Structure formats: C-alpha cells, structure tokens
Image: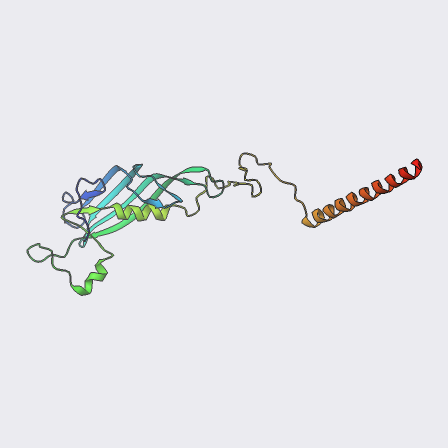
Amino acid sequence: MNARLDHRNPLVFDTHELGRRPGALQRLSRSVAAPKDFGIEGVVGVPEGAPMELELRLESVMEGVLVTGTVRATAEGECVRCLEPLHQEVAADFQEMFSYPDADDRGRPKAEPVDDAEDDEDRLFLEDGLLGLEPVLRDAVVLALPMQPVCREDCAGLCPECGINLNDDPDHHHDAVDIRWAALQGLAGSLGTGEKDNMSGAEAGVDEKQEK
C-alpha cells in the first residue's frame, strides 16, 4: 500500500485552487531540496539536500491535471577519465498526467475493477486534490544525467603507464620500446658480459705465465 501524500512535503502540490474546470492554468516556481537517490548510484547525481529549481505549469483537463515543467540542479560525481571530482549543471523537462480517481455519482472513489488494476499501476493519481512530483522528478533527472560523466569534453585522462593526470602535463610521454629490440639488447648484454669474463680469464693466464 502506497504512503499517503503529506501536504507539508515541498514536492507535494495542492490543486484545489486550480479547480476542475478544463483549461484552467496555474504556473508555479519553487526551490526545493533534493531528496535521496536523485542520480546514478556510484557515478553522478544531485546530492541530497542540494537545491533544485522548479518551473511548473499545471493545467486542468478532463482526465485530471497535466503537469509540464523543468527542473534544474547541479549534479556531482567523478570524471571517468581523470577521476577528478566534477560539478555539472542539469536541466530536465518533463510532462506527466495525474488522473482524477474514478468516482461515483456522489463523488466517492469507486473500487478498481480487477481487469484495470494492472493498467493503473503505471498511472499517477491525484489524492484528495494533491499530487506528488518526487517520482516524476527523479526519473527526469536520472535520464538527463550522463552515464559516462567527464569534467570536460577534451579531458585527456590519466597516463596508462604511470597514472599521471595528462591535463596537468599535456607533453608527458614515455619513450616507446619495441619488446623485440629490448630482448635483443638483453641478449647482447648477456653475451658482452660472457666475453668480458672470458677475456678476464685469458688475461689472468697470461700474467701467470709471465710470472713463471
């Protein structure tokens, strides 16, 4: 069972002033603190408590209240290339219909038909004239966030060999060594060492003969 809406919640809006006459409009601006989980976990998101700016248009229609709006906020995360912290402005548009509960001729909600119960799972309803925007805003913000956030489009990332931030040292590089040449150089070094040892032994023999 879903929790009932609390009119004290800043993301719950009262539509009684709007009324039920089709075509009636109401425009609202509101700054609210972001709830938990407004983002992609472990990647990027709007921190809990950070300000979100809302611009809303509420329109009364036959079926209920159509809400159109924009949410703006600052997301925080980590650049996937250089791993530095980042801050990114996010703006997301959304539109959602909040339906009137089905009512009988006395204005009382009807029991939901079994056949329609599954279809109603994806619908949002007004509750005593209140509508809750939190799930709508969460979906809009998450869809607007990048799956691979970067601190800037031309971020050079980290050196794959030593891990230095290439944005701080654009000219950083490592001399490429062909592993085949490296192997030959190693072999040459081994041979050179062997030759020196042989020569040292031969010289020692000559010295011994001269002493005799």
